[in-house]
Image (cartoon, rainbow, N blue to C red; front, side, top):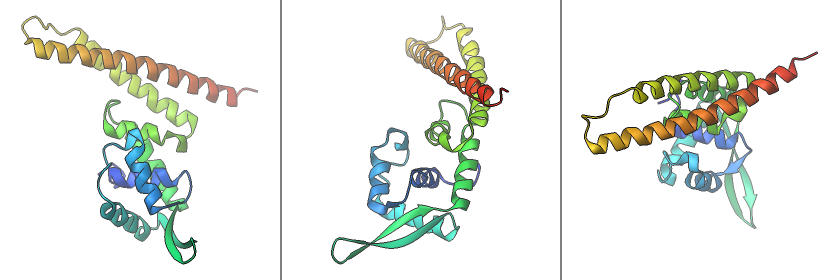
Length: 184
């Protein structure tokens, strides 16, 4: 469950539908092929359709029957304004989690629903959290640690450094675009 009461699957479904209406099979295909949806890929079509039905009950998705081919009717799903609000909240809250978590990655995947100012502030906080973690593990004395643990910490350090640089660049770029919007 995310902080907003959405499951990871709900968050992905709303995020996918924010890009436009889609048939169930298209939604499942996107869940299975997008790299940021790996946490929910291969759940099965029954699970996805149950989640879509639950989102419809909450008023976050509408379903309409569309004619496909000569006689086949298919359900087409579309996000509602209430669904967009739920997606916005879930995305904003996901970006409060630690930057290497699935939740944070999900937030980044759907960050386009946030304003650049909010996104920039979330990224700056994430950058600071990562810098703190990096300082902690960089200062650790690993001489007495097993070689495997030393290797894991070295890998984490490398991941944190790379991600930290990327987050910093992205946040600064967003800050510059926000500042440009308010210049007279």
